Each structure stands twice: as C-alpha cells, then as structure tokens.
Amino acid sequence: MFASGTIITLLQRAIMQGIPILYGSTGEILTEKSGHLNLGIPGIMYVGAISGVIGSFLYENSLPSRDAINPFLAIVIPFLCAIIGSLLMGLIYCFLTVTLRANQNVTGLALTTFGVGFGNFFGASLVKLTGSEVPSVTLTNTSQFFRASLPFADKLGWFGKLFLSYGFMTYLAIIIAFIVAYFLKKTRRGLYLRSVGENPATADAAGINVNRYKYTATCVGSVIAGLGGLFYVMDYATGVWSNEGFGDRGWLAIALVIFAIWKPNFAVPGSFIFGGLYIVYLFLNGLPMRTAELFKMLPYIVTIIVLIFTSVRKKRENQPPASLGVSYFREDR
Image 1 (cartoon, rainbow, N blue to C red):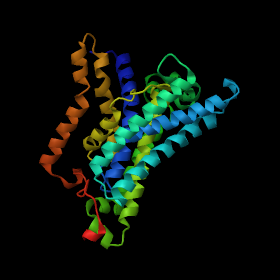
Image 2: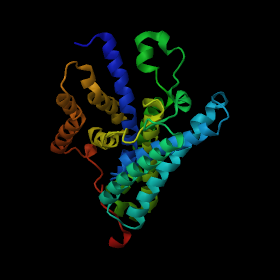
Image 3: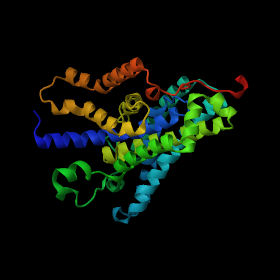
Image 4: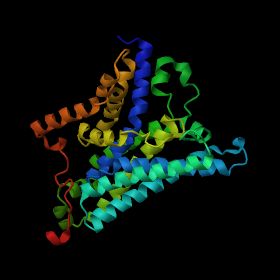
C-alpha cells in the first residue's frame, strides 16, 4: 500500500494534473449549455497556451536584465495574451457555426487541427529565435510568479502541502467553476442560456436573443478553456513550452463534461479524479510500459461507464442540453 507521504504527493500531483482539465471542462460546459458542441476545445487550449508564451517571451526579451522584471506585468501580459488568443478562436467558431451555419462537429475538429498547428508553428519559431539546441522555450522568470504559493504553506504540514501549496491559477480554476455553476443554476441569465440550449425556438419566441447568448457563452467558454493552456505551461510545466507537450488534456476536458453530467461544480472533484487516474501508474512500481499506457485510458473508461449509467437512468437533469449540436435558424421555425 501507499505510505502517507506518497498519498499526499499523489493527491498534490492529481490536483495539478486536473486543473488544466478543469479549465477546459468549465469552458466547454458553459458552451454546451448554449447548445453548441465545441470539439475545438483542445485547439483553443493550445492557442491559449502559445499566446501566453508569446506574450511572456516578448516581455522577457524586452527587459534590460533579469532583475528588471515586474511581477505584475509578468502575470498580466501572458494572461491577457492567452485571453485574446482563445477569444479569437471562440469568435471564429461562432462566426462559422452561428453566422455561416457551418456544421458544429466539423468546425470544432478543424479548430483543433488549426490550433495545434498554430501552436507548433509559433513554438518552433520561438525556438529558432532563441537559438536553443533543445526544442523548447523556457520562461522560468515569468513562470515563478504563476507558481508562487503562500509563504507559510510549508509550515502547516500535510494540510499546507495539500491545500495551500499551489499558484493562484489553481484556486482561480475552482472559483470560476463554482461561479459558472451558480450562474447557470441561480441567475436569470443562466436560465435564459439553458433555455437556449434546450429549445432555442421557444427561447426566441420568448424574446431571448438566441445568437447573442450562443456567441457570449461560446466566447467566454473559450477564454476559460484557454486559461487552462496558460496554466499548463506557466505553472504545471514551470514555464517550458515544447511542441506536442500538451498531450490529450483537451480531450480529457471534453470527457470530463460527460463525467460531471454538465455541472461545473461536479467537474471540480471530477478533474482531480481524472488527474489521479491519469498519473496513478507512476506510483505503481514495476509496471511494464504497455500496462502503464493502459492506465492512461482509465479516465475515458470511467467516462463511458458514467455515460452508460446516466443514459440508462434517463434523469433529465443529468442529460445534455436537448438541442446540443443542433444548429438553430430562425427561418426554420
């Protein structure tokens, strides 16, 4: 069995592994509540990550010395760049699917392909600018401010290590998830958004601007997902960007939407479970490589089990929005 210290380490790493997934899942839940199935989330997270890296790279290289770095600007510049990059991706998706009436699934997959290509192109370009022999970009000066934790965390034993030893973006992800959950469940505009996802024709007849809600939910959801990419590079990867290093976390975020039954507050513990399942093989000594790879399938297997269970029970509140993936055109009413 695991020793107590090993369990704390596993839980810590599970939380860190789960936070980028939580960002992506929260953004996708908000998007899907408007009736849009955005399979471009992996690409949007990728663009959010590389946009933050570009902003951080330009800022660090504009400084006369390492000591001249401003902590506020070191956080705000990559943060704003990630928001702008992911927002543009969300706008592209909305323009194609809402305005031009393109197929949602095809558009989402195209955005994922584009986002990964966009990130790899600019990532490789930055590597060439640095002249590094290693195919990666290192931004440790900026990253240190994203990873900074409370100074007294280490003095509080296991409690401090487990709950207080993370950067601000870890707590921001959890706060955003609960804010989105409150918005969807307790506010009038959240009710309007859910009605758009359930029956846009009825919502339109009630005077709700369907297109505006679809645009807003998808763009805000894209921004939230993009912050997951920024967290991965600046916090989890300690400021190191490498092409294809993001892995399948974007797809795990989409799987988490189903696991959390379209509830952002459920996605918080769900993301930690996914993070733990994704890395638990590292704590099982002596596993052959092929068995370790099978362990990485656990989050998807659990998602399939949850999907089957919720489908069998057919409880309406645990089902996706009724009009998910179905485009709405007022002329067709």
